Image 1 (cartoon, rainbow, N blue to C red):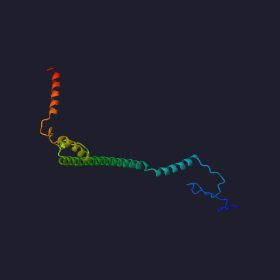
Image 2: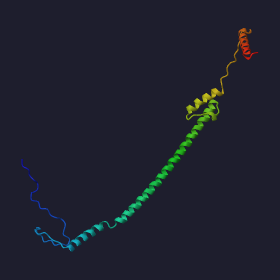
Image 3: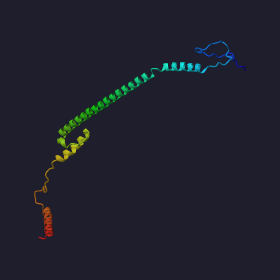
Length: 176
């Protein structure tokens, strides 16, 4: 298997840049070129001037960028302050709405269950109703029918004997 190259093997590389002021004698570069210190200094100065020209407004741009960053940070902090203020106001509104709702529940349950609103405790309507039921039972006990001891109409001697025994026992304890 033979490998074929697309380009010939004898490639000549050519430098694209000029000498900038140097002479181009068109030779194959058989002789090395020598420079004096003054020529080297001139070449270096030209290169440095060229590079400095690229960055001559760097300090100005840097200061402008810093000012822009400061303005953005100030704007962000102002936005953050407004967001925090907005969140605090929303919380106050939500708290006021919850307080109003709770007050409505308390008055409604107090009216329905016939208990004083000041005594009701609970966070939800169900808790308020449960507490109102307990308060209603304590404040308004169900009336019991009167107890009749002897429904036959004749005096009961059994109770009298028991009462008499208890009285005699008490007299004995007291030493009378």
